[in-house]
Every structure is written in C-alpha cells, then in structure tokens.
Amino acid sequence: MSLTLPTIPLPNSQVDPGDFSEEEIEAEAIRLQGAIQQLHRWPIEACRTIAPLTLEINRLKEERDVFLIAHSYQTPDIIYGVADEVADSYTLSKAARDAPQMTILFSSVRFMAETAKIVSPHKTVIHPSPEAGCSLSDGITAQDVRDLKTQYPGVPVACYINTTAAVKAECDVSVTSSNYLRICERLPGDRLIFVPDRFMGAHLQKSLEGRKEVIVFDGECEVHATFTGEKVRHWRKQIGEEVSVLAHPECGADVLEEADFVGSSEKLINEAVRLGSLNRPNVMLITECGTAERVLAETDSELNLFGACVMCRHMKATQLEDILQALKEPRADQIIEIDQEIIARAQRNLEEMFRLAE
Ligand code: SF4
Image (cartoon, rainbow, N blue to C red; front, side, top):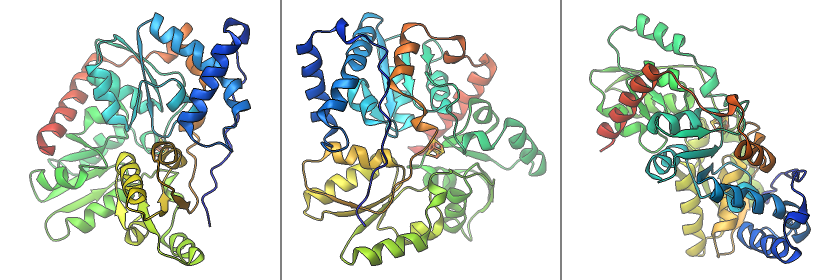
C-alpha cells in the first residue's frame, strides 16, 4: 500500500532554450533534480525541459525585484524551481509583508493571495491563476455570514483563514489549523459561530462540549473530505506493520480518531521528517499530495510513505508558464485589488487573531 504520487504534466516551455547556454541548462536541471529528490518522477530529461523556464523566471524575478512565494501544495517544479519561500498561507502572508520587495507573486489559490494583500495593502500582489479557487473559501459568501449574524445576534463569529477577504471582513476573528481550538476557547460568551469548515467545526463542538455551543457552517475542503476513517483502517490493515498516521485537521472526525498526529501542513512535514530521523520510517499521510512531495524532498532519512494522497485541482492549476506570463506582464485580473473598507475590516479580524492566539 505504498503511496503513489499522481503524475504531473510537464509544462510546455515558452522559453527558447537558446536564451541560455547548454551549460546553464544542464546545471539548472541538476539543481532541480537534486532539490526535488524524486529521480523516477522527475528524471533529468524532465528537469532539462523545465530548466529554461525556471532560469527565465528567476532572472525576471531578480530584474523586477519580485518576492515569489508558493504554498506547500504547489508542484515541486514551482516550489524547488522558483519560490523564494514555501509554507502555509498565513506564514507566507507574513513573509510577504516583511519582505523588502514591493511586488509579491503568490503561487497558490485566490483567497491566499487576498490574505497577502490584506496584510500588505501598500504592495502589489500578483496571483497568476485567478480561476484557482477553493471549495472552502468559495463555499461561503459575506451575505451567508451576515445572515448567520442576523439569526444569532451578538454571537461571535470565527472564520477559518481559508476564506475570502469579504468573508473575513464580516467575521470577528480568523483562525488557522494551528490555533483554532485556543482562539475559539477564548472568545467571549458561551456560544460561537464557526465558518466555513464543518469538519473543523465538529472537532470544535467536541472539544468545547459542555463549555460552549458551536454553531457550524456546512462547508468542506473537497480534498480532505475524500478520506474516511474506514479507508485509513483498511490501509493500516493492508500495510500489516506499525505505521504512524498523520492527518490534516480539515479531515472528518472519523479520520482524526484514527490519526496518531493531527496538524497543519508544516507540522505534518516536520513530524514525518522527525519520525524518519528516529528510524520510524512507516508513515501514512492523510492530506494533499504536495505534503508528501515536500517530505520526500526535505528528509535525508529513508521513509516509507503509505496511503493515497489526493491532489487539489485548484492548487495544481498554476504552472510555471502562468508564473512566467504574470511576471512578464500581469493582466488586470492577476493583480489583487480589494476595497479599502474591506481591507480595514479584515485587518481588524487578523489583528484579533494575533491577540487571542498569544
Ligand atoms: S486543499 Fe482544500 S482547502 Fe486547500 S485549496 Fe484545495 S480545496 Fe481549498
């Protein structure tokens, strides 16, 4: 039951390899293969094909003083080829805010680029794939939150960070997969509204049982919703030896009950690398495939990854060609613009997260 990572189509290079010398392309291909660390899925021929693209993107990035950040679920050619920083969405937004560059290119889904704009309103934030959405953030509107507030007047509203700027502006505080329990516990009163993730909401209901009533919206991450406790038990049985199950909190409660460790993407990567260093190589990752790609690239230990990861079609919508085009000449729909009033209200929401997370 070894983990098989899905094939990622190679980009059609728009860059004339003649723009770079054979030596430059060969050196870049070797660098890419060494960083990605998957010799079979990313053979040297594939790395040679994308090398002119990564070379050109890196050249343009420097020439135009652009800080390029990529979410962990982006493909390895983006993560190890052109990104200046890779992490979860909120860590990246803070990195974008603190970077000296005034232009940020965020390779990810739309709501993440919006979060970067909220924390850096004075910077230009480019999002190469405007159509790259997210089933969680697109599953709720600002009007849905207003309706909930009318139905439950005075009840504080917490939103998972996977929401649009307009939704954040309507909520009292944002939470991440690392701090949602702590923050919701600290909200005033004995009731709270949690949007939009019903799985995280169910986990909150269980954790706060007897202390707070949690009113939950009915959204879900289409990737993590595909896992079930039954599948995990089935895979465990097939493996037939000791395996550590690591799951993302966007999974359902039945999956989390089977997990030995629950955490955000960064925490899952760190835990898998830690287990490898302790000579506990059997790991089942219950999350998006990008996490497994990063684990393989970022550990020197022999790890046996099991289970079946799921690719997020939204996250995989961005390719190197999109990044190159957006760097060269971004279209209007690739530049994040948010109404000033929404930015100000969404900023208050994020400041409240910092205050309550301490
Ligand atoms: S993995 Fe889930 S939460 Fe993340 S972008 Fe895809 S649909 Fe949204």
